[in-house]
Structure formats: structure tokens, C-alpha cells
Image 1 (tube, one colour):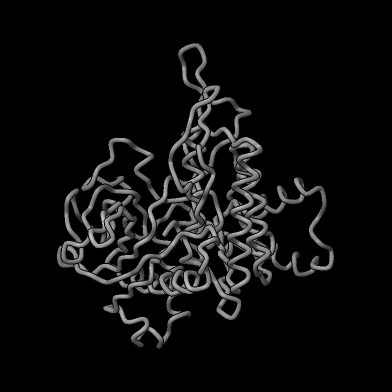
Image 2 (tube, helix red, strand yellow; image 1 turned 45 degrees about the horizontal axis):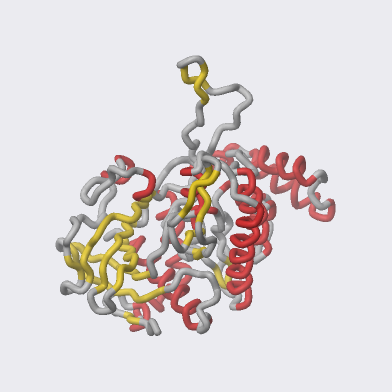
Length: 381
């Protein structure tokens, strides 16, 4: 989803500082790095006390959120609600039991707001194209089971059914007190991420929002060794294709969450699939250290950190274009606009998704393929 939340939001608001205990007092060392947040999504693993009907204060005032309880039925009783799996600006993810196929799945219920509904049609189309191309089911991308439109408590919602997975890689690191993974685990996880991105590249698709929040462990099981959690399985699934962009489609000027954004995107230069490769590099560093590679909120500082870590200046052949881009970044208008995008505002992703939906769908939304009432089941064999 171009600049998204997590649909997911691409905001860069400060993450809660990690604090050290010192003689029964809590204080943060001046040398200790500040954690910064990359996602507005909320998962049940973040709070054991979360239950249906109770959502974080951030989302309580949002219009169009689905309201349901454990045991409620969706779509003529086919889906029974088991628990709340996640909450975000885009809507709600429910863990439900599919009585037709006799299994538990994840059901994303999009907010009953037109701009979110429009964006969901784009995501469904992308996921369906991925599903058809992945006949052997070896892409490491979350599997689309189906999509439909229904009314819940009198409100129209688009629902997207996925295979059920575990927590995100970021959530696992957070539960591990921000300790990174071991080398053998990083090798297994990174290989699957690269294969998933390579699969997208083969069909002409750029993900545009690669980050640890969008990589799920297939199973939550883990063991504890030396006071450190270790997943029993490193199998992963790549999610969140709401902002993914095909080569022949409009390319948004701002993509990715701040800390994973490629230099060409920051400088306002043309971008393509290599921007995903840059994001993968940032993710690999974080998998090892447990910390963000680029913990920043400003474009100029971000570029300076890149040059420091890479040990060289930006390519001189783009020097003039870089100077022009930096000048634009320093203008008051541009700085204000960037801060609005990077600030903790759950409505920013919605605006970007709405623009993306209008650009990609246009008049096609009136066709049967994109009709809001169309129920599209897919082959799950």
C-alpha cells in the first residue's frame, strides 16, 4: 500500500524509550538510543488483556470500525469470531473459524469508509494476481483465500480472508527485549524474504513497504534458551500488499516507512524494485542487532547517516539533482509536508491509499471485476 500504515501505517512516531533500572530508580542513559516506531497496527500479542469490544484508545474514535464479540457470526453464519488478532487504521483483523472448510483463518475487516474500501479493492486484485502466479505455493507470500462484501451491524465492510499466521518478526524481537536473532535463524529468514521479493520482481511488482512488521512467522511456537526466545520454526510469510506497485502503474513520490526508505525516494528521484532491496538490507541489520539501522525522522539526517554507514558520499553523477532535491527538502513547505507524513497521524495512510485507489482503479471500479458487491472466492486447493 504506497504510503500506508499498516493498513497499515507508515508513520515514524517515537517508540517508547527503553529504560534501565538504577538503584531502584528508572532512568534512561544519555548514550542509550531512542527506539522509534514504524507501525500503527496493534496486535493481540502486544497486550494479553485485549479482548473483543476493547481497542486501543488511538482507534476508538475512528469511524467505520467493525464492532463484534466472540461468538458472533459473519456472512450467514459461515465465519465464527474467535478473537481479535490485530487492529489498525485500515480496520480490524479477526481470527475466525471457517465452518465450510473446517479451519481457523484470519479475516481482515476493512473500515466502512469509502476511501478504505476503494483501497481494499486494489489490494485484493494484487493478491489475486500473486495467488494465480504462485501455483506451487512457494513464494513465501501470505495466501489469499477469498474476499467478499457484507453488512455487519448495518455497515458495509469489505472482508479479505487469509491463511492464519503467527506474530510478526518485529513483535517477536520486542518480546525478546529487542535482542536480535542468531545467525542461522537470520540466514533462514532472510533467504525467504529475498525469495518472496524476487517472486514479486518476476511478475513486475514492487512491494514498497518492506519492514519487520510486515513479515510474519508462520507459527508462534518458540523455546527459551539462555533467557532468550528462539522460534521453533523460521518459516515466514510476507504480508501487506496494499501499496504494492506494478512497473506500468503510477509510482507515488513517497513510499516505505521512514527507516526503510531508499535514498532515491528521499531525494525525489525515480525509483523501482531496487528500493525493495535497500529495505531488505535495513531489515537484515535489524534482525541481527534488534535495533533500527536508521533511527531518524528527518530527511537530511537520514541522508547523512546513509553516507556515514556506507562510508562514501552519494553518487556524483546525481550531484546536481541531489542538490536540487536537498534544496526542496530544506524549503519550509517541503519540511512541513514531510513532517505531516512522518508524524503520528493515522489518517495519513488513508489519504495516500485513497489517491492510489483513484489512480489505479479509475473507471474500472464500475466494472464487475471491481464491483463493491462482488463476492470473489478463490481456489484453495
